[in-house]
Length: 193
Image (cartoon, rainbow, N blue to C red; front, side, top):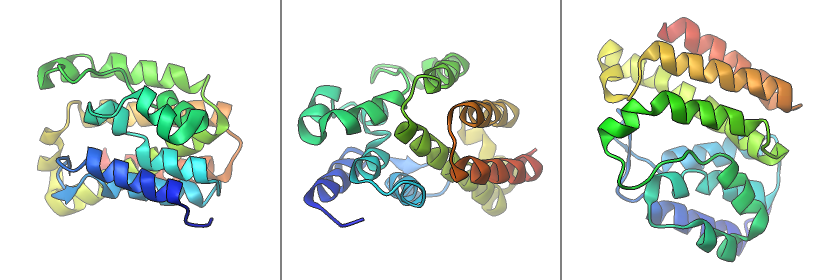
């Protein structure tokens, strides 16, 4: 893939929108996650729009300052479709308690939406899940069991969610990234539970 102005713009937007966010438990800027998801995605599909969408995949959901309309205007229909296919329904006014209370509902909606998502969005979903599971294992290695209290759900529920994501991707996506996710999921399940 050739580094283009569109990719630089996606890096700039993602970095700006996540500037005040931290990766839970790791004391790292949140932007390490979108960068990682973009790089994992690029191993399986080398396309500028997929790379940009992977960088931007949490911007609408988590920042509250970047709209779907703005994304469409700046990055086009494809990037916007890939991102919105993976965006959970949240509002900036949702409290931490509200987000924890409707966690299961939001996650089930996310899985339901995967059945309609385009191939490229599914690649990003798999990369996102791979990096999240790897991060959970890294957290447990560095912090032991106490790290789990930072999250809005139990370890069992979180792993059940990733199991459902994996099952949906096995039905909807024909790509070696699904096999990689399966291996990471099995490793995480054994290590975390």
